[in-house]
Length: 122
Image 1 (cartoon, one colour):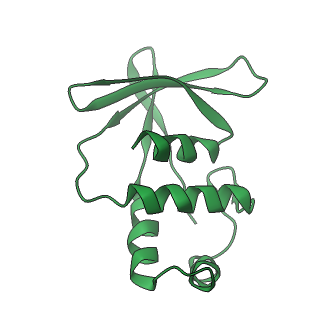
Image 2 (tube, rainbow, N blue to C red):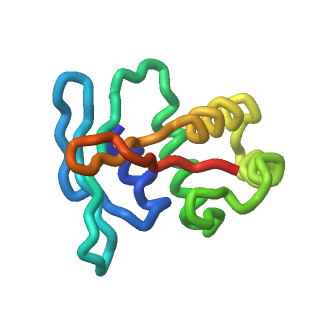
């Protein structure tokens, strides 16, 4: 899960600076390279049967290929699937992984209140 979160936050040019699991909740702080800004976050980590390894690979691919603008994937789901199928992915695995990734969100914490979220979409 931690490696997936690192890859997920890299999509936002952020890196995890602190990370703590308390009662099935992950609390942490991300920062941005060469910036003083920090953002606290919280995530319910009650996940079962989640394709974290594939989701990490997908995040790394999106990042490496510069396929994001802000929180938006800049190509269609069909185009992304075609690229990954050419790279050896299975269509069912792609669909379950992209469905997970597009439904995944990490809540931002400001003054211990959940405010906005980190998430990606098409």
